[in-house]
Image (cartoon, rainbow, N blue to C red; front, side, top):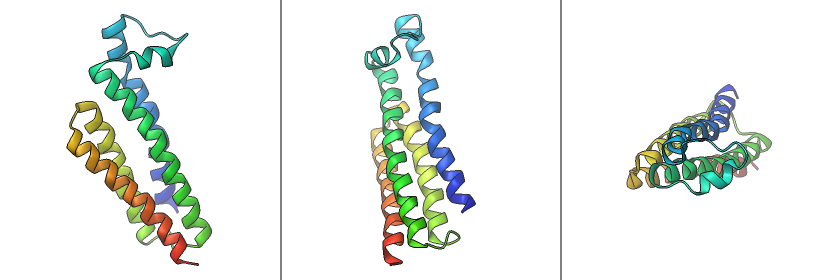
Length: 132
C-alpha cells in the first residue's frame, strides 16, 4: 500500500507545485501577486500563465478520480503489490508529465499524458470491481 500512498501524495502536491509555478507569470504580467484576489488574477493570466492555471485545475480534477479509484480498489480487496502499484506509478509519472507538457504548451503530449493517467485511474477501479 506504500506505493499507492506515495503516488497519492505526489498527486496531492502537484496542484500546489503548479500554483507556485504561476508566480513568475503573475509578476511578469501584473507586477505583483494579488493576495487579496488570487483567483481573479489567475483567471486574467494569458499564454504561459494561463497554461499553468489550467494545469493546476486539471491536477485537482485528476486527483479526485485517482482517489476514488484507489478507494474502490482498497474496498474491493485488490492486492496492493500487483497491478495496482504499477498503475499508480504510471499515473503519478503521467500526471507530472501532464503538468510539464501543459506549461510548455506541448498539447499532443499533454493529451497523451492525460489519457494515460485517466486510463490508469479507470484500470485501478476496474481491478476493484473485478475482485467482487
